[in-house]
Image (cartoon, rainbow, N blue to C red; front, side, top):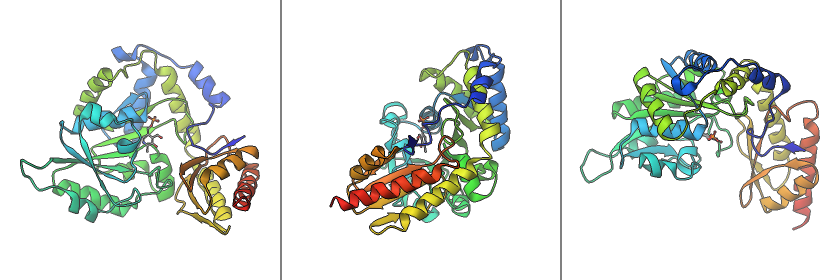
Amino acid sequence: MFDLRSDTVTSPTPALRAAMAAAEVGDDVYREDPTVRRLEQRIAELLAKPAALFVPSGTMANEIALLCHCQAGDEVIVGAASHCSDFESGAAAAWARVQFRVVGCDGLFTAADLEAAVRPAAYYLPRTRLVVVENTHNMSGGRLFPPAEVARIVATARAHGLGCHLDGARLWNAAVAAGCSEAELCAGFDTVTVCFSKGLGAPVGSALCGDAATIERALRYRKMLGGGMRQAGILAAGALHALEHHRSRLVEDHAAARALGAALGAMTGVRVGTVDSNMVNVDLDVPAMAVVEAARRRGVLVAATGARRLRLVTHLDITGPRFGEAIAALVEAVREAQGER
Ligand SMILES: Cc1ncc(COP(=O)(O)O)c(C=O)c1O
């Protein structure tokens, strides 16, 4: 099976499993796990932030960030269909107790959108407190926020005294797409989420980065949310291995996504969104589920993200010499579904 539903479906490689098995560990709730500390230092260095905290998931990293930045009743500005507003089971309402204000239309937004959405200071209005940029943006089809626009967004946020959080679950992909370093994409943000379990192919783990005082508070929130882990160095070793060995190959996933987009985009009745990274949004003139089923019969798993939309994601388990077979099977699946009309 070629599984294009998500870049989270990868199986750990033998070398990654070996690195996990060999990990030096301690009790991380006592902050005595040397491998976790090594990962946290490595991430802080890579992102040019003073400190980092290893957490079980990207959701927890985002939720801790909201807790660090906001008080109950505050308003958080996000792009449409952002992970922290739409795909975290309502956690932001349950834990940080904030409300979201959505700007832009397809996940990306501009500094002008932000400027227009910041509420004036009045006791009867919610207090605009934070802006969240998701880069790359998942539901928009892995779109890259243009770095110059991000700089303007951060400057606008600063001018209004807002905090800035970057949901960089796929920051690694964004850096490849932008042709710059992860640190450059993080500049100006107070806090940053990164994930090791997406395109990098580690089985578990994310990190929240920021200044030392924020990460000290984050440690407390991590414990409150049940994210304190004991011999977590086993997981951190997988993340370190993925960082060292799988980051440089993301460029192959992006090339595969472009090839997939080009093949499908050449078909009548199919519209392919801009392919910036390892995702392809495909709008169809037939029900998406018909293509999902036809593709499954041909050994390709794809996800319907709308009645007539598919999201296809490339990753290290499928991008390789045989990927052309997946593309051909998908083209046939679309043809079959179109033939059924
Ligand atoms: C942009 C983004 N942020 C955060 C997350 C949450 O990560 P996790 O599944 O580790 O909770 C995801 C998951 O897909 C994501 O796509």
